[in-house]
Length: 103
Image (tube, rainbow, N blue to C red; front, side):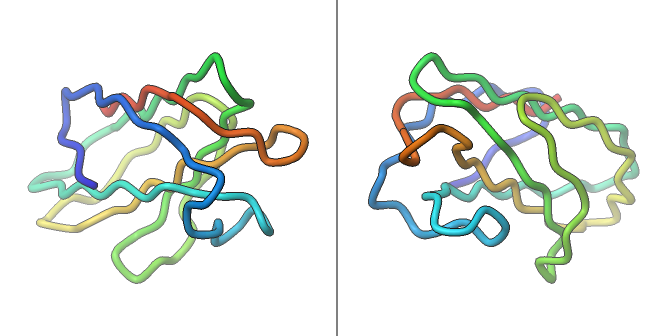
């Protein structure tokens, strides 16, 4: 799935989604975005259904940052692609509807 700067997208984390790269056996959805120029970005993740957690990776899946609901980072841009991993920290890997925002 893709998301652009200035967008807010609805999501639905499924318990049968692919497993997280960093969060053990928890399910995870992956979103991608590309930056043309260096920029300070804010990634917000919210859900009433589960305890949200997000990770950010560069184009080579190198870890860049993590937080439970909001992540702010200065990124290099230059046409670089980034990946946001949306996952859960809830007991029993609870899942459900969520909202992802990239500013």
